[in-house]
Figure 1 (cartoon, helix red, strand yellow):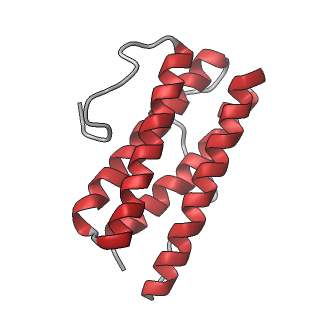
Figure 2 (spheres, rainbow, N blue to C red; figure 1 turned 180 degrees about the horizontal axis):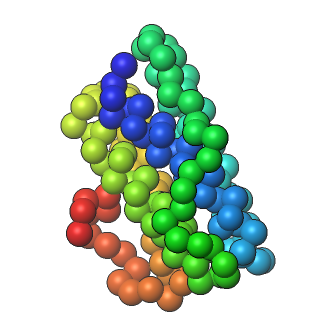
Figure 3 (tube, one colour; figure 1 turned 90 degrees about the horizontal axis):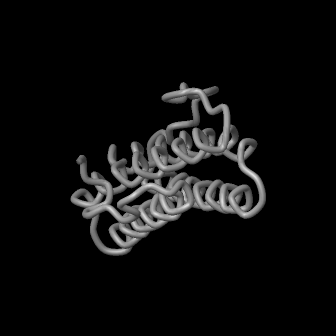
Length: 140
């Protein structure tokens, strides 16, 4: 089993958890986007569980809870957390690229791209510039 894919699964578990407090602080279209983002992370998680199960070995489960990097108390902090979660997830997907090939690599690249696009959308909604970052998932 690929440790990089196991790390991607752990990142997806954490992202799903984070969208709980994010979603309750957002309204309207932003709340809808948070639900869509959570669903996307759930889909990636499910695909990774299936892939890792097929490869054999133990599939890491979600933790009972995760420590958020800061309190989510309003819309601004919810948007900040959404950006951070997507950037962290993109970084984990990026780290998995060199360890994959073929269809697996395509799936990993899709995970990186999806997280980068969601981070861009959250930056735009939060009014943060630049909206687009070069080389998503790469440390600044």
